[in-house]
Amino acid sequence: MATPAPAELDARDPLARWAAEFPAPEGAIYLDGNSLGLPSRRAEAALARVVDQWRTLGIDGWTRADPPWLELPERAAAGVAPLVGAAPVDVGIGGQTTPNLHQLLATLYDPAAAARVIVADALNFASDTYALRSHLRLRGLDPERHLRLIPSRDGRVLRIDDILAALTPDVQLLLLPAVLYASGQLLDVATITRKARAAGITIGWDLSHSLGAVPHALARDGADFAVWSHYKWLNAGPGAVGGYFLHPRHAGRPPGLAGWWGVRPERRFAMAPVHEPAAGAAGLQIGTPHLLSLAPLLGSLELVAAAGGIAALRAKSLAQTDLMLERIDAELAGHGVTVVTPRGHPARGGHLALAHPEAWRLCQALKAAGVTPDFRGPDLLRLAPSPLYTSYAACAEAVARLRRILETGAHLRFPAAPALVP
Image (tube, rainbow, N blue to C red):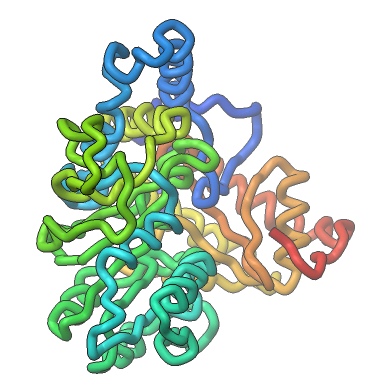
């Protein structure tokens, strides 16, 4: 059966109407939502509402705003919980991804245990590795001895047998990304979590490149913890607050890094000399929440719920990347482009990664042609359609513009990649 035309897919797309929530320049195609999502009208309205409350209520916004600012982190946790497959009490909203990872390591990692090795992967976003190394040093251990990175056989993806082979008796903690940020590979979270737990290993996940694009079931799968950002697929704005999950089996464990916002709400202002942790993940919160970077998340979560939740987003995401793969195979053959993202749905996140020796120049040429992709060195071009604001027609047109660039050599008019690129 032939794939329907993009216009037909758009005409019957139940999510198409939500694109109006994301104002964008006419003709522009934004395919970088896996790095920074676009603002929605609801996110902007939520931010404006808090700013107006700040103006009119001042300090009383904490208790007299509607809803009170004191409640906003919990409201955000309730909105994120269905996306990660957890109870709201097991989700914390605040801080950012790397500080939250530091907090969870400080809370869950035991440097005095017989098994002290931390395992991560060689392809993960570097900030996670920095955190792991610095945490080991802080606990008096040598990262060269106590941090083991699972290698990739091709520099693109990880193999599950290599991951499982790394779960040796000297390992205490395993941290992996659910979706690899460069290649877009989606790991088998359920299987890896089950195997790690069976080996007595604490298992954590970085969901930064999967949250909002891929459904998760952290509680069901048994993950000990997870961290993530909200400014990518969830469109909460640059530098938006982060989030984390703590499995209820760890309830009552004192936070490794204690702060006043992690105190039980009814005791928070008592200023008792001894920390009294709030229930669940909230006990790991440290400082006053950043309301101006939390407010847009509330608007974004409202939009996700109205659009049908994560299942609806995932279905369209897979359909859009299926369409793009079909067009890439048909239109870019012979132009030196290789798809490095696994093609099967169970192993594919929300974005596609294309390898080409001139990926940097292609990225610049696409931007000049009205398409915003993303470059990852040394040779990857990432294309990330967002189910909420990218049409099927835009997906097809982006591939067509890339084909025209390659056919005409338009990318060769741009400078070669600098030695270091962002």
